[in-house]
Image (cartoon, rainbow, N blue to C red; front, side, top):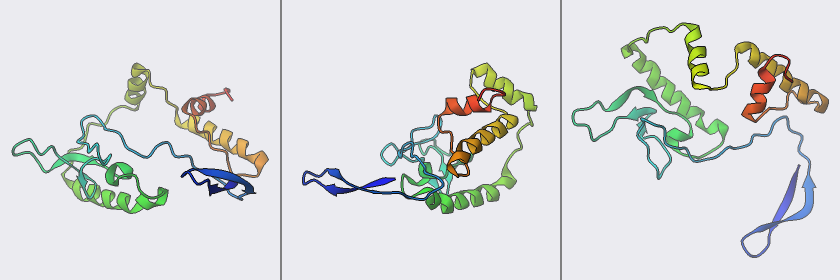
Length: 172
């Protein structure tokens, strides 16, 4: 449901009391538009982007004789191009970045394959909350159950703590 607005003469808007009900399945809430610096990556504070060419992250230009790009490091989305467009507008950027990644993959040195438990141990050791694949299924079922009374496919659980709680066995 939205309300029609009108300018009030001071540069602000005010509601007119005229409302429209929209028949939609989902509404997306933006969590921000300006990317933040990521440790160990170059960053353009003004643009809010990681300097790149076609998604390949540019290496620090101050190092004499250094490689042009950071090895196996790529960006896409708003951190690649800045905060423009809607969700679908960055698909072309993602395709461009993935094409570069696939082209470069032949030169990658494979990482040692960690034991699956290593990820769990790392997260637990850092005190980072996480869920399992089974937990994701519980969250999915919970969201679908929330949407059912409203005739919707689901109601998305947005808050991280709520997602984690819903993913735990017998916690919802």
